[in-house]
Length: 73
Image (cartoon, rainbow, N blue to C red):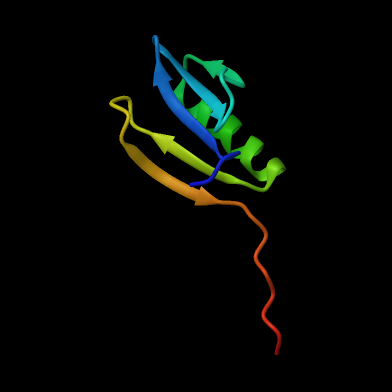
């Protein structure tokens, strides 16, 4: 994924969202579901990718919310 993408990950007992390239978490939550939903909304608003990690740090899912280019007909 590219700089600016949103990563949802588990650290220090909390689920966090961080924009790639940033040094701090955008938000935190004790619940995974809430963090994933918040990360998805951030990614959609910014038109970037959203990467959800497992508690161990592996990539679980990746979604791309960049606008698609229309092909000429």
